[in-house]
Image (tube, rainbow, N blue to C red):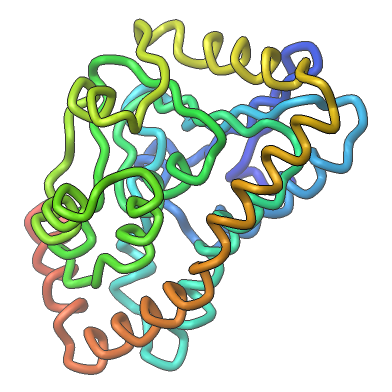
Length: 253
């Protein structure tokens, strides 16, 4: 497995950790490949009964796409680049075992989307999450699709169109977070939840998860295509590059 992804075992539960803490565990091409490959490997490992996703360090679960990579993206590369991140979402859904998101800090953009497609979500009161892509001149399309499975139209519009991040309490009140515990208990609680789900009757669990998978994937390809076209247009006009460069410059990068 890639060094940008670490796997730790707690009994029969595998903790898959995004390991780029210096970049707030942002989704690079390497991270996307590593997470997807690790999910497949763990799903095929009979000694693993459940999987917990979390981020290295205590600042972020995952802050979305890597802006250092995004600043250099070419229009012709958008589909493959965006497809790498979207493949994580698909693999989370395709994983037959319980997948629990242990949100240990910021979960933004693609990071928030990984949490949304997980089976259940655990966080702490200091976590923040949302879909800020529009503020980086990236259309909020795939994120708005995943949120449509959880939220009503009006709240989805607000979060997608403003790009604001929610505090954990708000996300919990909206039903986006299933369990909220203290920061040092997030991973332990996620492992506990994974163990609980893994102990459900096998056929009932498999068919229940399969039905949620079918519903989630029913609009996936359409959202992916719309997301590719939207990003291609933004990059073709130089909008995304300008906003990303200004943002990075403001942070001396």
